[in-house]
Image 1 (cartoon, one colour):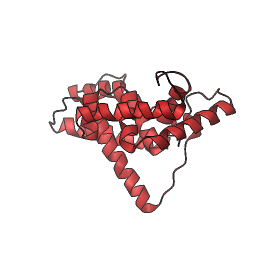
Image 2 (tube, rainbow, N blue to C red):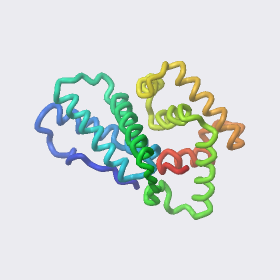
Image 3 (cartoon, helix red, strand yellow):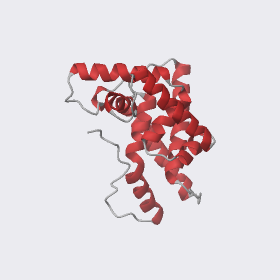
Amino acid sequence: MVHIPCLSDTSAPATSPIEQEIADVYRAHASGLFHYAVSLLHDGEEARDALQEVFLRYFVERNCGGCVDNPRAWLYRVLRNYLLDCLDTAARKHEVHGSNTDQFPDQTAGPDALIYRAQLASQIRSVLSDRELNCLLLRVEGLSYLEIADVLNLRVGTVGVYLTRAQKKLRGATGQDQDFQAGAAQQAFAFLCHEGAG
């Protein structure tokens, strides 16, 4: 099981309404945010740092009187922008990051199964545009079309187009005539989402 970093003991009683709100939002969204960060950074430690930064920014926003109508969309948008800044900085420094092998969802799977999933995940990544992949990653984390549109600064209809294109490409790339949500393609995409394989 993946260890999600904890900002504080969220089981302890909060001392203010904002602290209680942040503890509730953290419990509801930290896992999905962490997996999304890993899928973009390919590094569990950096993903943990990004998660801490995003919740610190949320605390500052709320503590300064800012209103957050949709915390999940706000958190994903801030996380995505923070991750893009991190990736841009790393690219400028020519840094190379390795994958964390302790993040595999099924470490009991045999080496052949892991290799197959990694190859299929790489194939999936190669057929999708960055926008299609981002829309799909956010959809897998449970965001609605409206929330994805908010995070990626797109129109809702555009999100639908990207998701439809992504599913068609994935069916073609994986040889799946039926629904993408079944079988090896789903396992490979889970691998892609949670391990940052590619």
